[in-house]
Image (cartoon, rainbow, N blue to C red; front, side, top):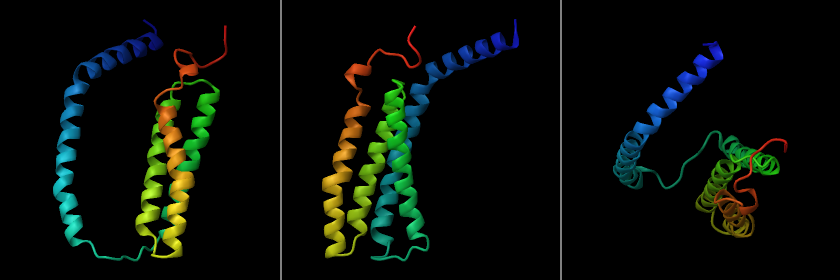
Length: 151
C-alpha cells in the first residue's frame, strides 16, 4: 500500500471511530460545561463591579470588528464558490454580529452613546445577523451543489 493509501485508510478508521463515539462525549462535555456556567454566572452577577476600566478597550472592539469583516468576506467568497462551508462561516458571523450589538448596547453610556448603539444594532448589526443566520440555514439554490469547476 502506498503512503497516500495508508493515510486515507488511517483517516477512514479515525473518522469511523470518532463518528461512533462523538455523540456521547460531545453531549456529556456540552452538558457539563453548560451546567458549570450557572454558578459562574451567579458569581459574576454578584461580584463584578458596576463599572470597569479596560486597558485594551480599542483593541477589543477593533478585534471584534475585524473578525466580523473576515466572517462576512469569507462567507461571500464561499457562497460565490458554492462551497458548503459557507453555512458555518455565516453562522459564526451571525453570532459575532449579535454579540457586537449586545456589547455595544450594554457597555454604552446613557444618552447619545446608548442611542447610537441602539440605532446601529437595530439598523445594521441585528438585520445583518439575521441575514447571516438565514444563509447559515442553507441557501436553496446552493443545496446539493459541489464547489469547484463544473465537468
